[in-house]
Length: 299
Image 1 (cartoon, helix red, strand yellow):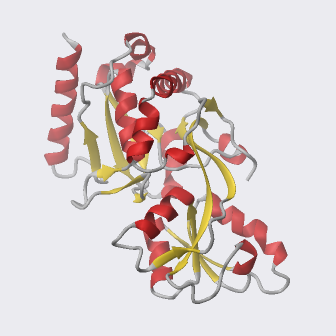
Image 2 (tube, rainbow, N blue to C red; image 1 turned 120 degrees about the horizontal axis):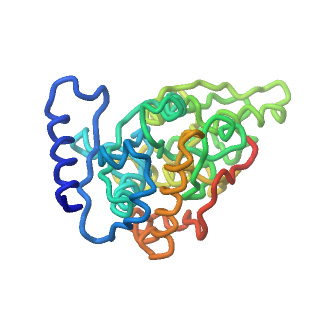
């Protein structure tokens, strides 16, 4: 059987799954590998047997975080620099890649339970998270403060959040950042409200129910520069707080997969394909020059 026929069979099965009622609980994104990046047979052979035989790499994401991962205008297809990078990794590894949407705080459990193979969802690699999963680091970003257009509350920096209502996505590093900032508030604590996804948190700012929202810089910058949303939001400043690496999460007991994916990413970095993907999405400033494992900071 040729490698092309294996891809075709895998993608056909994925298409049947999409059409079958109840096949998947969450919307699914399947990208057809384009013939632009060659397969590395040695890396393909290092994949776990189940992935090699199935021909599919299952990736979980929270599709509310453009330009990393978000829904396209059809409300179904997941697009962003993460799905594009996932597609490229799949081409190197010789497998199809399927992204599924889940709440952010559920992602670690999905990979540790082997419900998915990887998590790729702007997850900041931290020492605390490394206790649960391993990370292949692929990007660097810090936190930005998003406020209503016009900044009616005059919020300019992190310390200015004291006494204000701040909307955050549950399970993100921003929750910890705000908690660590409380000691500066001297009787005027930051009022934190948590939401299941980034979109819901942003709605609170847009409607005036929250004074600010904290997001990773690429997502915040995309939001304020997008013609559809820029009329409602702006950055409080250009500052990025506590920058750190994004990591592809993999189960600690799946070292074969971790090694194969890490080396596939190294191949994309060295070939220049990695930077081309980031450039297409306007986030090349967050590019890494060297692929690291578990290089997170304390948070």
